[in-house]
Length: 233
Length: 233
Image 1 (cartoon, rainbow over the protein chains, first blue to last red):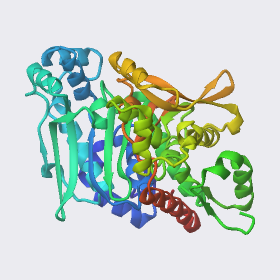
Image 2 (image 1 turned 180 degrees about the horizontal axis):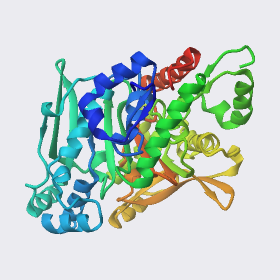
Image 3 (image 1 turned 60 degrees about the horizontal axis):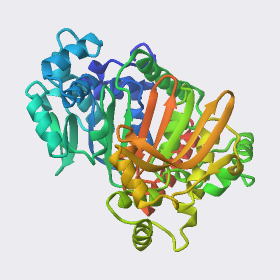
């Protein structure tokens, strides 16, 4: 930004930690700051929340923002134990050898901060978000939930309540009628709760080489339209 | 357009019947033609398919594009007969006194033509789309599907196959693992199948006064950004 370049990044860190500062600098310099790939890779969650739903008041955002943990929970419902499901996720390349960033909820936490600050205009830091991962969920918990028509999902959630913005990452038992309950495997999803449109849910990939590459392409198209000044978007 | 005005419309007719002519005229005159409300009211299905997924090849689009029929099918799964569910939909204001446009699939057909021509660059007319509604589906059909882990949905579908674009509206039995199978009641949903992003699904309202009003607001925001020439979108 200091050297006069528009920015497209899929790196969560700078956007989760310094969005306000970066976007102020971009605005001062007449530059675009784009970061579609930081949440759900190229699935256009941020384009949807920031641009397509502009004009709505977004009162709550919640979603399945980490594919690895959703894959593990999906396999646990099919009868795998946690360790077994984690091992498989590691073999498939979904989970790292040290899986903490996924299974402890930290990856989803970064995305919650980004959604809060960019879609809802909040000014959260990661320390403002309570965070619990999936490591304490047993096969028995998953089976009991299933028997009661519920399904565990690791949910990142941010909501406005009495002028404050509250954010958390935690396992939740969702009823099967919730659109997010049907999202299985490594797929991600996010629901925007709005005043004018009710709930709007987007389901798609949360990671992948081509998918993250597409997020950069989508950002570059925005920058191109901006540079041409007149394409309408 | 002939008098030099940008257009925002939520009226399906002109876009389903004359999109190519209207968009050519708009382009010649440097005007914007916007029509978000013609498919899924204000749920930004067209913004998503046309703008956010630009850069992807969209090879297939399919969705639950009519809320009335989805409501009727949802109630039939709860044990209502077709006539009983239709009557209730009429009492709730979902279905017209003469319900043919919904239950015969014609409303969904118009939306399929719009999706085909605006998102996939096709040049379909309504006559190119085969169309079957839900009037022949019995409570027994719905119950049999349920027993087999399937669910009837009225699906509008358009896909590229060997250089041709094929489109249809018909009841389909979807497996419960399909994201559209979980969409119940009057809610709508659409899935874009793409080369780079795989399947991207959007779930939201398909009708409503505030929702259709929002579609006009979203169009006007596009027109405003265009008029300011430099907002990026």
